[in-house]
Amino acid sequence: MTSAVFFDMDGVILKGPRTDPQVYADAADAALAELEADPTPSQHRDFRRHDHERIRDHCTDLEIDPALFWELKETHASSRTHDRIRTGERVTYEDIDAIDDLTDRTTVGLVTNNRHETAAFVADYFGFDFDVVRGRDPTFAGYERRKPDPYYLEDALADLGVADGIYVGDSPKDVIAGRAAGLETAFVRRPHNRECERPVHATYEIRSLRELLDVVEPV
Image 1 (spheres, helix red, strand yellow):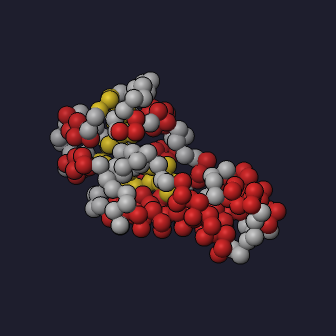
Image 2: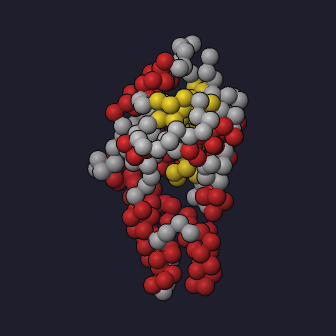
């Protein structure tokens, strides 16, 4: 029996492989305004991206707390993402009903590179009964621990007290992180990765989350 099934979020549950870059750009603007910072045009461009090393340097130059800026930017990005979900600008894939069926069979979790605040929102908004939800912490260290680093997967495994299972993702880094955490991996095909080669060492390749019901045996 499979001990647990963990799902990536972007590209697996939510349509699209990542958060729209404009969300982060707008979030950076909001954080800078809140901190009353006045960056140069060049600094402003860097703040709107995710180059955390440059952001640290610019915060020092502008005499603002880098950690506070980053946390504010992450918070504003989450708020904007949640609004997009509420208004239907960002939606789920049609096969997510399979997750509900899997909760009757085994332990189920959500582990994503996206912000933890947004992962928790998605789980609650769409009514998923996940046993664990883990997204990235709103810190520089949290950002650096994203997949392919297995940190958040290992944290979820420890939280549940299990040592094996399946990680479902849509990218090679998901497969790398899953294997590093000691999990089998299921690479799900979506429109954005249809033409990509199957990642090396992926245990399964599926075209719908419903195919997991053939892999995970009922208790």
